[in-house]
Amino acid sequence: MASNAEVMRRSSWRELWRVFRHPVRDESRALLAANWQRLPGALKTPRQMLGRQGNGCGATIGAMPRCDFACRGCYLGDGANRVPAASLEELKAQIRALRPVLGPAGNLQLTDGEVTLRDTDEVIELLRYARSLELIPMLMTHGDSFRRRPGLLERLIVDGGLREISIHVDTTQRGRKGAEWSRAEREETLNPLRDEFAHMLRDVITRTGIRIRSATTMTVTRDNLDGVPDVMRWLLRNADVFHLVSFQPIAQVGRTEEGFGGGVTADDLWARIAEGMASDDDRLQRGAKWLGHPACNRFVHGFVYAVRGATPQFYPIRDDADATDREIVDGFLARFGGISFRADDDAGTRIARMLGVARSAPGFLAHAVPQFAVHWLKRFGKGNPWRAARALASGHARVQGLAIVSHHFMSASELGTPLGQERLSQCVFHLSVNGELRSMCEVNALGIREQYYALSMAAAR
Image (cartoon, rainbow, N blue to C red; front, side, top):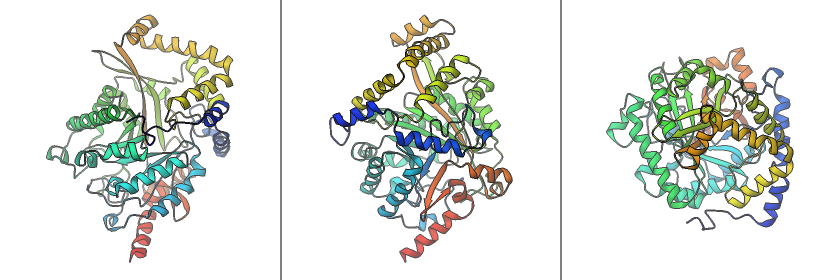
């Protein structure tokens, strides 16, 4: 299948030359500079990725308000299942409005209810349209549609160009196929379900020959906080297929059960994450980065080093206490901030981009690449780089990338505080609602989603 023109786009020589000459787009550099300029001085630190590498995230609203689950923590309004889905033209207008904010290779979430319940041809059209605007659409889903409708995931990948997917799994969900999953009370009980999704994704990658970047999300409450360590242990074992996890402490909005939201602090959550990784919390904190306000999200990019028969180990890509990490990671971002290989479908484009990077800063790379490689081999080999090199060369060990993220959405009461307003002014997660860009927290907590739904219902009558 990989040779199908719909599967792997082949770049022309002109496109390859452009990528080689400009591995980081001028538009990306300009947008990063503008975002950095808008940040208050206190947030302009080496931990800050807004304006240095990322430009935030966008999401659709109304793509399919209906959902066949009835989860305990739901950000949709009470009447969501009665709201008609937005038209393709309206959704395309939303995507166009987000494009200048997100920039090339910007992150777009296809979400709002369960999007896979929409007509498959229309989902494919939305995926293709987002890609035509140089955005990277991630389909947000509970995943059960793929269990119930074999072939659906493959069709979205092959015909729609889907390259990123996020599957939500946790004990707050209600409605999943299989009685053992629909009333699970412990996160570890859901690991066989997570295994099923991991096998599904590995199989579709093998069948299509297409790289799929998969994420998983988890709503965190006081009831399932103690399950986070086990979820992390599962992720370390499955980092070959799941490259990102997003933990989302629940806010009291939408149809969330009364009193269910709140009560989980960022420190509480990250202590459990560290426990699951057999890591001290300080090391994770030294590797933590921000995108916008630090109270809104935390994330750690890193590598999982897995030796056959041993417990996988996670290492942040940049330890704030390590001089080599600071020199090389910060030096790379200063030269190539905004670069992205995620939108490259074909090997030729990836190679052209890498060669363009080498052409742009040969002196820095000639010094940084071997130094960083040895540095990481020493880290993996517990001080012995040859041990790690031999294990990797023989296939006895492997290295996988993993990003650990926590998103902290606000309730209406939090939004009304001085800190809430400060966070809102630095928001990096937007939707286009009736032609106006709004923060996701505003949409969820201030009734904006319900107002949008009411207008949709009135227009459908």
